[in-house]
Image 1 (cartoon, helix red, strand yellow):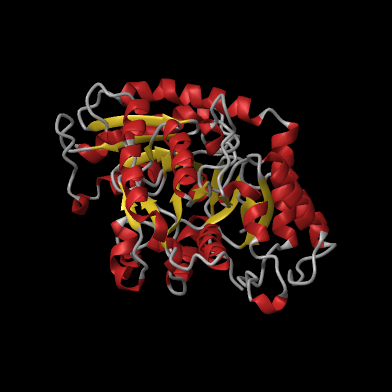
Image 2 (tube, one colour):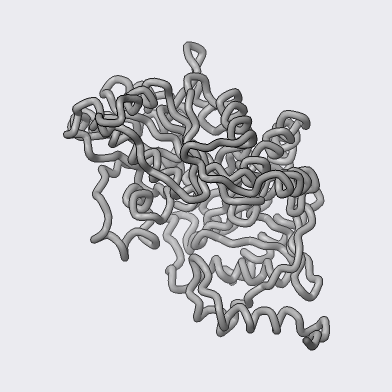
Length: 461
């Protein structure tokens, strides 16, 4: 087999890719024009390295999955060790040490009151599990009239049909609307929409009135409310105050509906605490959802795995004689995969052994300092940040917040500039955001922000 010259490796691999692969969340025709396909050969910490040896700073953690760097030696070693022991086994009637130990560790670190772990393959599947489990719970209790869900406007929970049903991002939802169940959408506490002079806390608390109105009207038919805590990620990195979650928990208790917290994107330190919902704790009580959905960073970005944590009372509603037909029969072929569970165990061990949250808080503070420079830009409506998640909202007119036309694809111009300069930025429409791995340095944050600002100047020129 001939070996291409080094200068041609990217071109050669890209051609082979485009002849065979259909990529996610992509208009493939773009890659026939000005948008290059980047074939990655290896990773190194916060960096990705293409087939020609060019390096790209991964400012988005490869779709928010990578926590401790690409090719992290601790996680890689754990997977290699597990490979020689057990690669996979059916998880119905069988079990294994990594899955058991991981479930125990997740319950130890999770909000108090969560007592059982159900494994799945990915984030969308975790949301499917939580939705079905909530619906099935009420059915097992004889409350068959509870068939609907409440979600926030601007929410994103995945793209399988159940998860897409409670998603309110038209780009993903509109085409498939005839296939979807119809939830009750309630106005998001998104603080981008706050009134002049109104604080994040004041706005978020005010928006609880919309949720109360929906629950007062529909609680007898509602199974659960599902939310992304603190940051609505795919909806444009829109953010809100933890006080909303505190109030939402009280409302769900008052009206007898479940609360599903989707921490797939924001869990494991992204918001400054291990779980975002921890920030909703009050002096009187700790915050505990009825369902906690986890994925992405759970394995440090190495392997697909998700988990749904729930309470003993929900588990007990399914615990009955076989003939009762109350069992939860949802399944995945790779449920509880040992390799993925070992990766997750080592990821959690890093949190346990190292001052991860202290480090990320310092990095987040440095990022906030650097972003001050762009806040007054004529085409920046808002710079917002929660922990290690930050976003810059680009608009045509700062005073009115009138957006650019989507057809202009200003965010794509920032993306292409980033690739030229060796930084992977993948804006959500015209929202330029940062969600880097925790191994990033302050110098790398400076590079990331400098490239983004230059890209914004280029995009709005």
